[in-house]
Length: 413
Image (cartoon, rainbow, N blue to C red; front, side, top):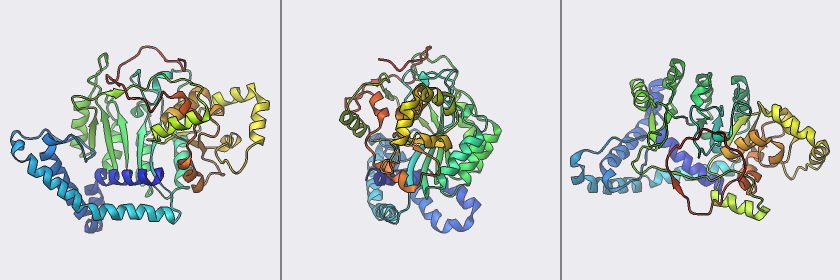
């Protein structure tokens, strides 16, 4: 059920973020059914615009302008109309839910969401980065090649029927020199419904990337606003980036812009030594908000040393594999073009400690992987990587945004 409910959530997000205007320009006949959706979404945007003073909820995937001074006189009627509009949307929502359930029953595999990691290199070093970039340095960093990530995506898309949303991340993904080609790969696939790029606005996109984004009808840019960082000393180009994207009519929105925005502390990342039940409970408290995918590149640099240090245990692990547990395939990674992890923390840990330690946590995109392997992955509740996280059931501690550190952190208490 986690899989189905996450699909419902991401299908709603795709509806609110896809650039229908660009689709209509490319395929005018699509206006027959897209124009009503566009009008409906515009109506929701307008109602949200005038009801902002009474509610902090954001129904759209981009930043709304500041409400006019006289909005106080009309915000209540607008809020009531917004509620009525949501009620009116219930038939459409019910249809979307029924469609998702029906496709599941028919054996279709529609992935809700995954984060595509291009590099662990970043222009910042945030002490509480949830992707663990603060634990990487030049000696253990990961950057895929265009060929490697293209093979990873090809292998994955061949095994699924669709993906509602792909988020391109790093590190700082704009440091990946072929990111424009990755955008074109995702945009050209009919199975990819929407995707976005997350950038910290420390560098501006190159013309090739802007051209690719402008040509896409299903991509938007997410800009992380770190101006509230207490010790950030690198220049941010948020306004300049906004101007560039607006000039090209590229959809975008800004994260962490609200006055009271804060991060939640991930705590130190290290092996806690929980028992199996404790690890399961920690996972269930987290509930897998995102899936992470990396190409298999650079694994070969660190994995053999760990395997060679204990060849007997490696052979025993390989020989004890059974078909009942399709995730415990260490040897299959030798022919894998990429791996699917439970979250970016898990994928980063695989680079920091090697894949062998997390055998059973991930899916290898090789010849033994099929759509049912992916479905079973969403039903799992035990992941060794969850032992490295703090108590996910404990109250979340708010911290300032993007506090910088000058040192490379270690996986120790």
